Image (cartoon, rainbow, N blue to C red; front, side, top):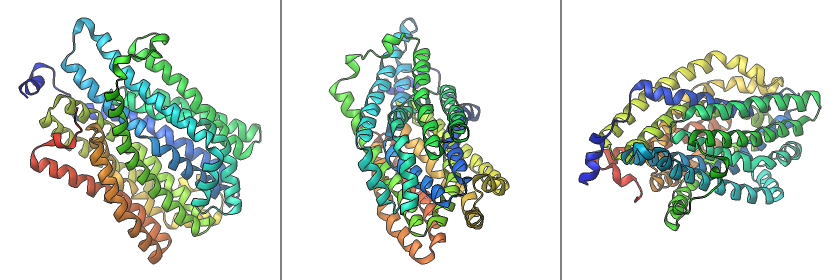
Length: 469
């Protein structure tokens, strides 16, 4: 205990200034915006094909992919939290004469374990492709026309699932070390390449939905190659060393720790993706026009969430480093300051959406009935950043703590409340009920996680939120 308490005084303190928080968040924000931009471009291209069934099918396909892939984004959060804490622990024992050797090995091993797990999961999903597509579309209540469009798109996109899962691991690993400019390079490269390839395949090669999916798939695989090069450059190691595993970091205890954390985050993420799949199912039951309109409006949530996640990564990176040092006074400062920045960004995003919404809807579709319905409900989407910001901010804090058990328990409480509540709202108010359900999903996450954090704060023991080292 005394050794731990002396650490903060023996080394430079973590920089928790607003300038530092924004410096971490801004490249992440820009990099993250590149991710939903790909779905926005794909949706906009299909939305201007003057075919409601194709646009509805695109919404179903994106939701099914989210259900499958985002369920495994624990690869991102586990990599981020573990690499942030590893960096904090390494700083405690840094030896200037042997810095590269002590830093590269544990950080590289965290990345290698995550990439291996991503490959294995992706291979299983690819092998199960026919079954997953058929069962998934049936579960989402796809009708024959929109279901066929979704299947056409998914048959191609599934060949990129391994690359997309590896992408999660790279994002988390870079973010946990505060190397957010590498995230920007990687995600920007994927987004630009995806847009160029998709436009080429659709408008030059006339490949339709297949071209939309093919552009995205190729872009993700090339993004993996760039990320590997960036990782090697960051660690200053050879290509051979990048793929060489250090057995001391693949012990039974470390593998079990990784799987334990992944298991808890998997439960959390699965519940969230099932919640959005449930919302998509309710939309599908209401007809293709409502499904298509909500597919466009929910892109607002996707874009806003990725933007807000920039500050959440700041919260995760800094809180993880503070937790690694057991510097709890600074941890409390990080909570407050990242909260201020998060809500400031949310106000700005809602103002931007309020001004840009008519232009956005006009860009996304030329189908009059879809445009009219989306515009009628656009204020619900405009307010999404303000409604959801607290959930993303506190997610960052708890992922920085690698508080897997709390993350899991909060998700289970959320599920017990959300699903019956959203069904009642839908039965009572139909389309309005769907949007109130989206709001409830975001607000409940804030309330539940806030309750766990407040309890730890009142007891003065943040260590109880963390797993055993």
